[in-house]
Length: 562
Image 1 (tube, one colour):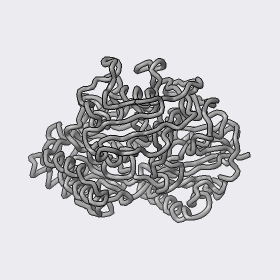
Image 2 (cartoon, one colour; image 1 turned 90 degrees about the vertical axis):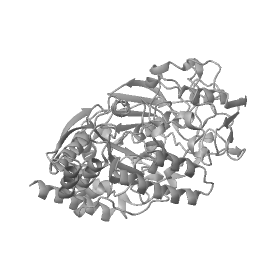
Image 3 (tube, one colour; image 1 turned 30 degrees about the vertical axis):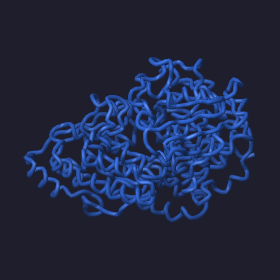
Image 4 (cartoon, helix red, strand yellow; image 1 turned 135 degrees about the horizontal axis):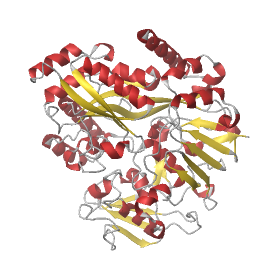
C-alpha cells in the first residue's frame, strides 16, 4: 500500500507539472487575477513553520527574509517578478546598484530622497552603517558572514555594543551617502547589499537581542503585534510611500501571519477557502497528501501557484565526528540515501528534480554529473555496505540526525532513517523546533552527526554558495553555515583563487569544477533541486513564486481582488 500510495502521489504530481503551462499555475502564476488587485483588506498568511529571526542582523533564512521584506528595506533588493527575472538585483533604498571604485575595493551608494522610518524620521546613511555594524556583535551571531569577510578591519571589529567608535571602513560623509571599504575586490557587492543585514536600524531603537521581536519599520508595514510561535500582525507604515519604492506594492491594509499551524489543516482550509481563508495564502508548499484533492478539483487547481528556485536540499554530514571523518563512510551514506523517498516526503515530482550535484542546473557554472549513482535515485545499499566494510564498519554504525520538528521535517527524517538502515546504518532522529533549528545546528557544539539541510545562494551564482557553505575558515562556534564542518586546505585555496577572477564566466566555470571536487569528499549529499507549489485563496491577486524564496510566494506583491 505504501508503494501504491507513493505512485498515486507521483502520478498526481506529474499531472500538476503537465498543467503548469496553463491556467492558474501558468507563467503569470496568479490565475490571471493580477489586474484585479486592489488596495485594502486583510491578507492572511498561513504558515506551518515559525519565523527563525526578524532582526535584520540575524535574518538568514529564506522564509523569514520573505516576511522581512514587508517590514524593512535594503540598499538593493530582488526584483518583484516571477521566474528568472526575480533573480535580478534592483535599487531599493539606494538610487542605483552602487558605484565601484579602487578596482571594486570601494563601493558608494546614495540614498533616495524621502525615505523614512515608521515614526516619520528620515532614513540616513548612519542608520545603515549602524545596522551593518550590529552584525558583528557576538550577541547576534546568525546572520551572513560578508561583513567580517569583506569589510576592511572586519575580523577585529566586535560590534557597536563593545566598540562605540564604529567600523572605520564604513564611511558616511553625509546623511545620504555611504561608502564601504573592502579588503579585496568584490565585483558583486551591489548584490550583497540586498541582504537584510544592510537594512537601516536607528541606534535609539536598538534593543539588542530583543530587537528580534520588534524591528523598526522602513518598509510598507510595521509590527502591530508579534507572539513568537503564534502570530505576527502587520499594519500600514503610513510614512512609507509607493512613489519611492518600485518593488513593494503595499496593497493590503493589514497582514496577519499565523505560525506553527498543522500543514494538513492549512491545506484543508485553503482547499475549502471559506470565510477569511478566501483572502489567505500558504507560506509553505502544499503537502504530499493534499496533491490528489487539489488536482482533482479544477477550481482549486487553478489556485495552485508554481515557482522555481535556485535552492539545493542536501544531507549534511558532520566531518568532525568519528567515523564520519572517513571519506569512505561519507561516500557510503551518499550511495545509500534514497533521494526519491526524500522527494516523495516533500510531495513527489511537484517538489523538484532529484539533485546529483551541488549546483542546480539554473545556476551559472553548473556541471552535470552523478558521482554516487543509484537506480532511479533510490539508493544503492550494496555499494554502501561494501564501502562501510572497507572502512571497518561491516557490522554497521549508529548516527543521530537533526531535523526540523515539522511534519515534513519528520517525514524526511524517516526517509533518511529507512534508506540508511538498508545499508546497516541505524539513524536516531533528533527533532528541533523550527524557530530554533538553524540556530541549533549552527552551533558546532550542539550539532549532531547528520543534518537535514539546504542552501539558496544569496543571489544567483555560486559565489554565495560554495564559499559560504564549504570554506573551512568560515566555521564559527555559533551562527555557523558550514554544517558539515568541512575544512579542506585545497578547497579553501581554490576559493581564494576564484575570488580573484574578474571575468564572471570564468569564475562560474571554476566554481562548477570546484563543486565536483567537493562532491568527491562527500561532506554533503544533495537530494533535491527545489520547486514549490503553493495554494492561494480565490480573492488573492498578484501571486507568483519567487526564485529567491525557494519558489514561495513573493509576499510584497500580493493584494486582494476588488
